[in-house]
Length: 296
Image (cartoon, rainbow, N blue to C red; front, side):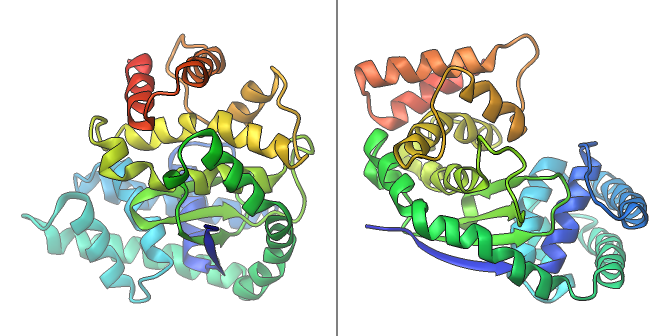
């Protein structure tokens, strides 16, 4: 069964995508320096409000950004994101007010700088979508063969955001959605963006209890990113998009900005874990739990 994909560009998700990158001190590649400076100031203000509200930052961003593509009323968006992150406790209304103001300022700045952003994202969708329609189903099918067929999500929403990192994206497991920067060209020719998209989509079912009940929810996205790396690259080779050579793993880890624990050679760790999995083929939940333990 193939995955049903829906595509949409979104201005607020684009603004929040850039803001999270600034908040994490990632290397921004926004061409308009004035827009970059404005977004940086507003992003840091939003990050400060998140801290002031005593919200776990990573978890809050992981709810706020995917929700922003589907909740059209900004205050309702903030309320829902907070509730899904920590529930409704003391100081809820104050936190909603402050975050609503900060997100509103960020949204206004993005709209002022790029008033036709939604139209631009529609145009930027075409190259990635055409590549996906040519090779995407084949990659997901191969990933299912390499892991478990039930691991491939039957549906997925692809949220296209304005480039802020020169290529970037995230899988939002609880929402069955992914966000990806709508690049007009592949920043790394040897690692096409459509492969990144297949890798993101392949992560979405890992939060099902049958796979993830032994892994802490805050660690699960990290484990999902690394677990789907080898099968995604092998699947990409099967449709003649990449060459699964020894250098492919570290190249993807660097290009896709996967966090690595200090002192850990993650490329070697993942390669050895994948080799063991191929040789023994345990249930996927057992393989995931083993990978979680390897990361310590």
